[in-house]
Image 1 (cartoon, each protein chain N blue to C red):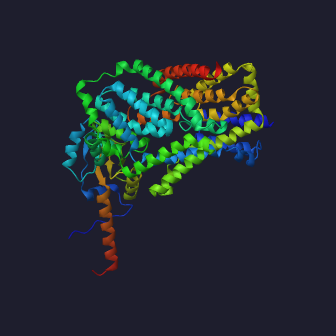
Image 2: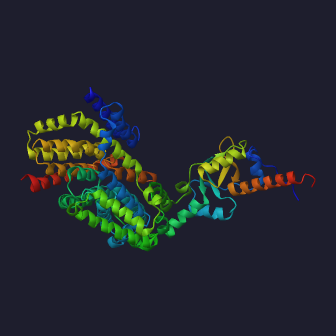
Length: 421
Length: 171
């Protein structure tokens, strides 16, 4: 009976999240609470399932990125990169993509793309070209960059906490894969947009007129923020050696920033996206319900039988399954549901580490396939539409699909070479 | 000295608009922003441009500040870039830098019927965060203009005059 109730709650909640019928945070919270109210699990079990390492890592990084956002840093970096690239549109796309990917590896993807976008709109207007190729490239690059580190994308944060793999392990395994995918992406972008980037010579110099110093609103706060974030990243690099969890490092960074800058905690903590935090809270409780009644074990056993327990088939299969699933549904709830499945596959005798990496690569990179595949995609489509340059589902799909397929092919080869040979 | 006109929250908008004597400032939606700007500088008391279609119906409004923002965006875009913190700001910036005609920069129309009350007018301006409101006929054509600041001053003057009359009934 519990199995049927838990499955119904789980499927209904995921359907509500996928179809956007109600707000995803409300759906996840109601789903998680329904598991308690309908006595699938008790409150103690549900609350115990909430991974505070994930919650506080997210909150700490949001506070750090939010403070940095108030300094004009992102706009400054975008303008500086434009000057480095000069007036050549393809070089501009590459440089802005590098910036989007690089910042997204350490900071929130949405913050990164939202604050690079206005500079992009201005540059496209000045060059008298459509901003579409620039914005699409930044979305794709941001998701690729976010794949590279433990803190780059929420699926990685979830996997890092569940697997015990530390920041250095993520950097050592995911960053080379992300780099390979990024190089292929740049080559692909050249083919995608070569016809759309013709620019008259007389407007090329106009993009150099922007003065990046004028977008810095608080240089002192910027300097302090960069030092604190830099030290926080160093802390992430050694957290495994020191025996601390990433959440401790992130909260330490946020608290240190508030102390050094004498910021009002209320103001800094307002930068935390509480709906996202509670989305995770709801998901943890919801997934615990289906774990407790044995549904996850049954799924894992089914997968194990399907692949006949073959490590290579399971690893590569999980990568592609994750890539396809994340293109269609939000990659956060997908990852939350698959983590116990991977854990169970490990318990059945498969080497679990390659499976964590295939889940991480598939979930992060798959989000690039559609305009609804990841939060950064949705937000940029929204702002582009409101600014008069709509990015439609169909318009984005051909570019997203090609990049995801090539990303998954590269990732398959990478996983095979590193773990499966 | 002229007798101050009685103003209360239930006073019809038509009476208040006549009292303020600030004429509507209308521009066609396809008009160049520069032309609209020149027009507004010749009539500075009207802080909200009414945008009309070919038939003269109100199809949008353009606050003077938004008009100025379009110029600022072209001259010193950095000052607008520095203020951006969210999606709405980006969209606004995108419109500002690309705006060439009145239609590119205008907002949804903000209007009120002549028989509505001042209270309703204040509420509408507060809700839309606008400094003015167009009084329109049943076909949606502007026939008057209510300015928030001028209306507020006139309203407060009326209250003060009433207070004085109450305090000194003999004078």
